[in-house]
Image (cartoon, rainbow, N blue to C red; front, side, top):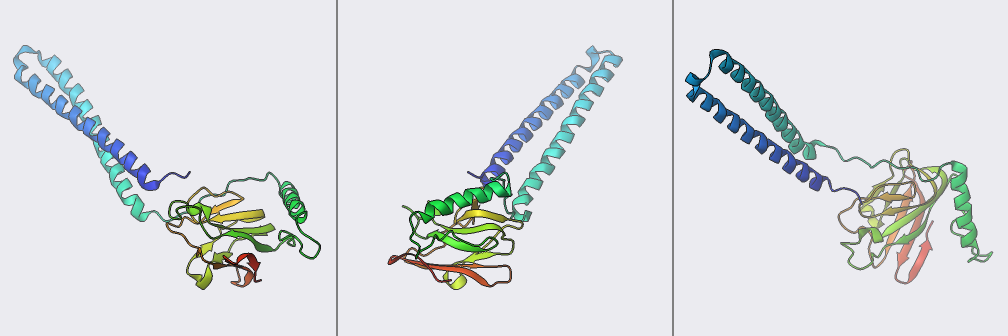
Length: 243
């Protein structure tokens, strides 16, 4: 599960504030000691007073620098959530090589083909270099608001770079943009909620459901904005390719 940026910021901010308060208490304690030295000035030699004063002054200077750095860090963190742009999470490697990825896909096609007849070939039987929507789940399980990742759309391509590709719902109310440099080496599921992107899973990061439970149309467009795949899913259809 991906870390919550707001929670991480609050935790770090609380830690810095605690450290800041501890430093202030140390400074107050040192100031009290200096005042005590001044009160008992007569009982010390000139040299011992000078040495003690220089030592305490050095400590105060170091603590003051720490306070200044802490204040700067707190100010920087307070500004960061508003200034930091949204970043697409990096895609981690799942398949070691392109050949091993395609071997994995051929196994998927072979297993799926066993369930089909010659008149109805496997939905995964896609020419290399092309991409298609191969499966969807529009209705989230249980409480849709809490289980956003139980609704998804699966896009399959064999060695297809999806930079510039888009996935959207009926009416184009919500649009998912594939990460730059992302290449599909088989089925890739695009989940509605949050998570860490991999070569087989991408996360939209939406706070609410995208797909209509009663039926929706998923459309995949290439970087030229042309429709390359489109499917309809309704309670009366399990899955119906439109293009």
